[in-house]
Image 1 (cartoon, rainbow, N blue to C red):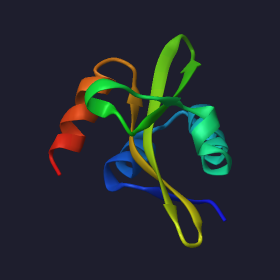
Image 2 (image 1 turned 120 degrees about the horizontal axis):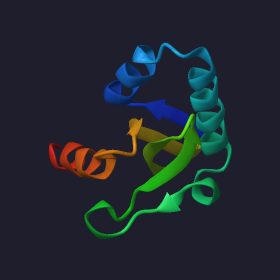
Image 3 (image 1 turned 120 degrees about the vertical axis):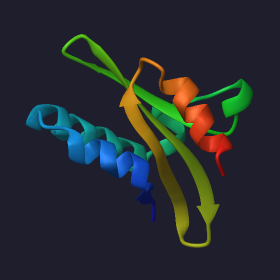
Image 4 (image 1 turned 180 degrees about the vertical axis):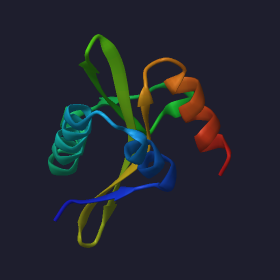
Length: 100
C-alpha cells in the first residue's frame, strides 16, 4: 500500500493557503502522487538527483511539489518535502535538503 508523509515545512505551506480551490487542487495532486509517485512527477537532476517534482499551474502561477520515494516492506512511502510557488522553489528545495 502506498503511503504519504508530509514534512512540517510542506504542512505549514498548506495551512497558509486561503484559496479553497487552490487547496483542493493541492489535495488532488497529493493523491495523484500517493497513487503513482514514479510516473506523475519528473525526476530531478544535478544536486536534487533522487527526488521528484510535480508541477501545475493555477491562475497563471506555477506551483511545485517536491518529494522523494522510498520502498519499504509495506509498499511505497512517498515523502512530501516541499511545496511552493515555482519562483525560487528549486534553490529553496536544494537548501532545505542540504540542511539535513
